[in-house]
Image (cartoon, rainbow, N blue to C red):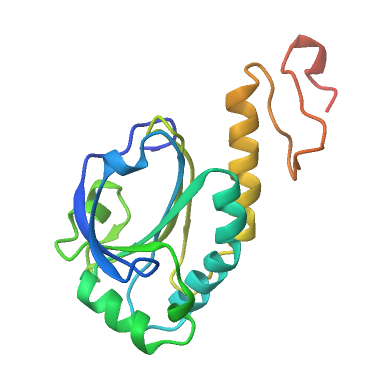
Length: 189
């Protein structure tokens, strides 16, 4: 069943906040009032995952300018996140909070847990300020994500939220034209 348009599940977990160099408790309540990117990944100390998190870090400043916050999450503990941060050149660059899901309950509630492997799938959620899922992307383990697409999706989500009745076509950028769905467009696009 699709999760688009649904409220995120309630959760509370520990995370490692590299920008503060401390462990923090984070819940779904921390997502309220801002756009949030929740980036699940399979495991720390792996191969594709550090490239994705480093790529997200490269977009982090631009996402913050949009008023968005980023969280990564795997089924590792917050202690493992800190160890990875302290020992990986790519992960040492991270500023966003790395959330822990050692009981696998959050990944299961978001329906991105690979039960057989006991690991989260490679999934990205964009959540609006009301806690509603606006986009969801899930990739196979061997296919890394492109964080630059997250920026464009948040911009489009913000535009649609602030301009009821208008929609953003493919490859839409902030200065691009939008569409107003109606009978006059049927069959003409």
